[in-house]
Image 1 (tube, helix red, strand yellow):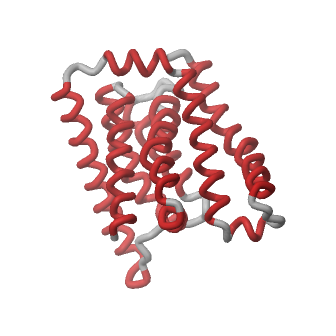
Image 2 (cartoon, rainbow, N blue to C red):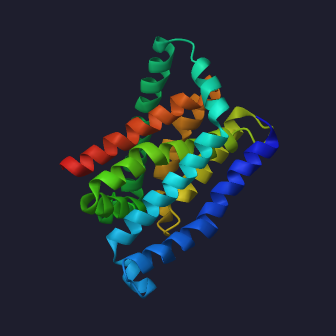
Length: 227
């Protein structure tokens, strides 16, 4: 893919966060008659709708802009066995990475270790209040957006060895998930991001890592809903 397209995708994503999300926040504050930002932080309704609408708009743009690319990637799948092998094998690596990071964080933090990042706590709270909207956001929309940005864009933007691209994309993936300030969980998100990058580097097929990401988020969401 040409570099200008990658830059456009990245620019649209950044603009959606910096410009579109504040507009959506104000819009839903008006709709739900909320008059202060302090009230918004306590309103699961507003945050759920802002998140869902933001994800839906970005996903729609990506699907339209990348429609020919997505079709070509689908046609490039070598076989069902190849696709499922890399998908479930890669997901297994994600689970192993999550387990290893949990052990590392336990040693770092000691007895006071809280295994739930602030980002994850927010998702759990919103999932409990609005399960359907958050299910669609977390399981379908987020994997498409994040794999387009962190694998397609960041791993093809610079001419560098695969291991450099994997670490760079995983670092960016981790930082995006700890913007709330709980940076100790950067390790956990990087350990999950590395398998996504590794599988993408080996297969060069975005559909595989998207489905891997869907499986991981589906697994995590079902655990939250059922337990």
